[in-house]
Image (cartoon, helix red, strand yellow):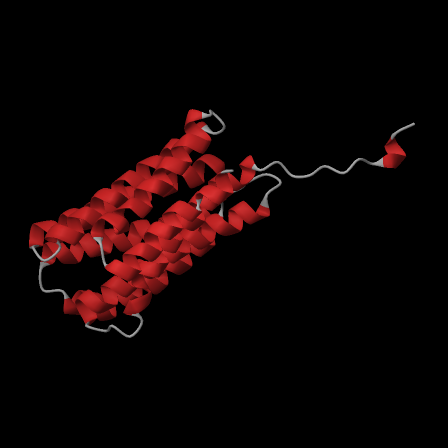
Amino acid sequence: MWPVSLLLPLASSVGYFLTGSFPLRSSATLLCLAIVLLSNVVQRRERNAWWIVFAFALSFAGDYVLGHWGGRFQGFVGGVALFFLAHTGYIGYSLSRGRIIRPLLLLLLTVFGIYYLLLLHPAIANVVVSLAVLAYIIVSCISLAAAAGICFPGNRLSRLLFVSGIGSLVFSDLLIAQKSFLHDATLYAAMMPTYFASQLLVTAALILPLTPPQRQTDSHSIH
């Protein structure tokens, strides 16, 4: 049942691309939140799933703020702050199931640090915005390195889905930075699809373990 429920946020995402309706855009996040809440928390299958509910709720709030007041200074900084906190939710869930891959974190911080220092920082005139972007880059690197160290015992597919979900979110944020500060919209058309994909993939990772694997009876063990 639960894997089929992903068709609801998927349909909402497609509806947004066809109509441009913000309610459809935001409902995709809320539907993913509801699926995780009902399938894991309410049924008490996984208490740590509250971290993802927290992350999705803040993502919805951040998306709303950026969608309505993103053109203003306070709106942009507020939206970034909410998505920053959403990443702490993803980090909390990852650490509840694993650990941060430190070599990967060092690599990410180095690559994105160079990207920030050479490209973003010179392009951002406002100091507060520049610091907010730097803080967001750091938490994104931690989020991805923590996701890479997550463990779903006996279920490698869930790990792959979760890491892909966080990776999609980081890529989506990178496209926003490219367009907002460097005025490069080359791949910007992929921004919303990868954002939706991040939430669908993370949700799929959490509900997949609810589908019990088929067990094969070892005939040689029966006497």
